[in-house]
Image 1 (cartoon, helix red, strand yellow):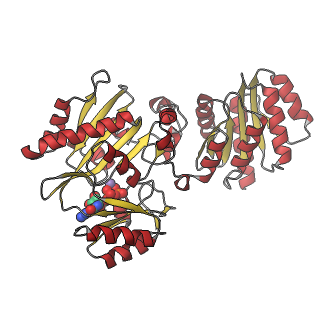
Image 2: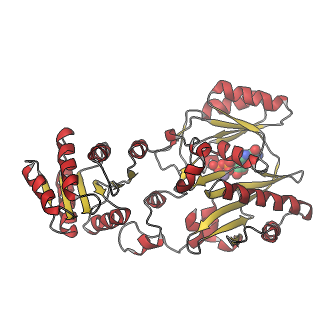
Image 3: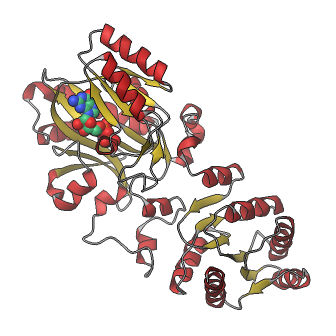
Length: 434
Ligand code: GDP
Ligand code: MN
């Protein structure tokens, strides 16, 4: 989504070169952005996004979330009783593309609604954003259907190049906006927002006209866009996306779908939003790591990395690729890691069945190398670590650290330089795999 703003004719390879490490921010969560499209910060479900947007005056269809088939039936019955001509049953997972994957179904009767709810609840939904393993559907949103006239697109996102928010609008709604951006970038209208001034009504009007809305819809559209912007700012969002933003046959405007992600760094100001996190939708190892304040992102390779500092983690992953291997994860234990954190970090690294070798790359500053070495030895003993461990150590108390490792009687390999260590660990992983 963020890449929309800087669409290039080719996508950067994960391996090779360093320019992309600079082009993309160096913040660890960005790694997830390389693995799958979509934003990288705390995500919430569509029904939660709609509840938030409704508070800011954004028009959303009537509906409710359901955890079970009984709840789904109750909501559908209620909507039909209130005069709905149909209901739509929507899978709630943290990924888009649900419509194409069979996770969005319209029903004209209560019986059909029940049938769809039965089929979708518990299904493993595979979309272009879930990866081939899919995501199990544990919740539904049951909504009144809208008589769609046009499907449009609205999005607000931070342009990191200019440091400003950009409000995007397109008549090509309802489809994958990434595809629109790649094939027909001129079909996306953009208004850059001056942070000192905010999103001007004139800008909202410009976008409303660009969407080809009827003159009688312009005022309502301006109010709609301004409400979206207000919601973005006041919730410290990192992305707000309405796809599709629809007009109905009777001229009304609705957010038919809604996606919001939030800036993690501002979540302390929003306890209610923090509580919306659904860990069932996240990678279990990443959830575990977050309990111990470890910055962990799972990747697909075979070499586990334990590193202090996000910049060093990026460099470590680069050099593993350079040596012909592939990283199994990004793990930053931070500056002041305790022995307990290091043990937990090991446990998490070792729970990944793909891991064939561990590369510990530490530059001792605040985290002294001897303390790290003590933690590593203890963890390797306590957890009876079998996979080869290669270390590259520099910095404060490095000699003491090396001594602790040498005297442990355990089989650690220490590289003289970062490059040597990377080559050692890639060779070690290859010999395990053989
Ligand atoms: P996504 O595929 O995950 O982005 O899910 P959406 O909420 O965007 O739904 C996908 C598509 O289903 C939309 O683009 C619409 O075409 C269709 N859809 C969703 N809700 C309704 C509805 O209430 N009525 C009708 N007719 N179609 C709907
Ligand atoms: Mn959508």
